[in-house]
Figure 1: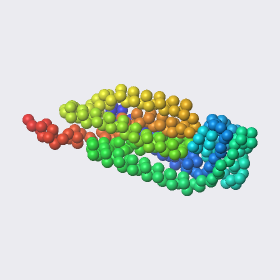
Figure 2: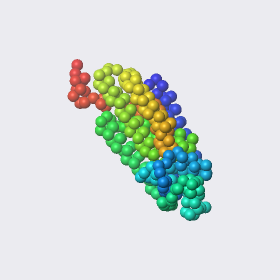
Figure 3: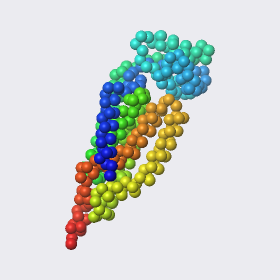
Figure 4: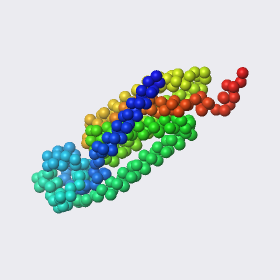
Length: 297
C-alpha cells in the first residue's frame, strides 16, 4: 500500500490509453460481427482442418475460419464479406482452392451472413457484460460493503478495458470466443478480489487496533502466495491452449492470458486501493454486537 498512489496513477493512465486506442484504432472484428460468407463442403473421408486452412491460405483466404460441421468429413468455412463476388464466384474460388476435383470435394451449401447478425451479437454481448457488472456489484454490496463494491467493479472494468486495448494494439481478431474470454475474465478477476476482501474483513475484526493500511498490507501478503500459484497454473493451461489449440481458440487464449496478468495487478492496486481511498474502516464490517463490546471500558 506504500505505492498505492503510484499504482492508481499508472492504472488511470493505462486505462485512458486503452480507451483511446479502442476509440481511434478500433478492434479487428471477426466474421461473427462483420458478417461474411458461409461455405459448407463435404470430403469423401476425414480431413485435417490444418490442411484445409493451408489450402485456403495459399489461395488468399488467410482470414478464413474453418471448423468441422457434424462430422470430420464435413467442413464449414467462414469467409470475410466480399461485395465484388457473387455466391457462384465465391463457391468456385473456394472449390478451386481446395482442389475439389482432385480430392472429390462437393459443395453442400453457401450462404451470405449480413452484418446485422453481428450487430445483434455485439448488443447482446454488451448487455451480458452490463448484467454481469450489476450482479457482481449487488453481491459484493450484500456480502461486504458498498466501498468494496465500487473498488471491485472499477477493477473489472479496468481489466476488460486493458484487454481490449491490447487486442487493439496487436489487432488480434475479436470474435465471439474473445467476447466469451472477457466474460470469463470478469469471473476470474472478481474471484481474486473477493479472496483479498474476505481476508481484509477477517483481519479488521482480529486486528482491532491496527491501522487500516497495516491490515490491508497484512491481508495482501497472506494471500499473495495463493494468488501466485493460482495465476501460474492458469497461465500454464492458457499457454498450452495458445500453442496447441489452433487458430479457433487463439484469440480466446490471448485475451485470457493478458486478462490473468492484468487481474493479478488490479486485485491489489485497483480494487483494494479504491476501497482504501474511499475510507473503509472496521466499523463498516464489524457486526453491531462486536461494536458494543469494543466500546465497553
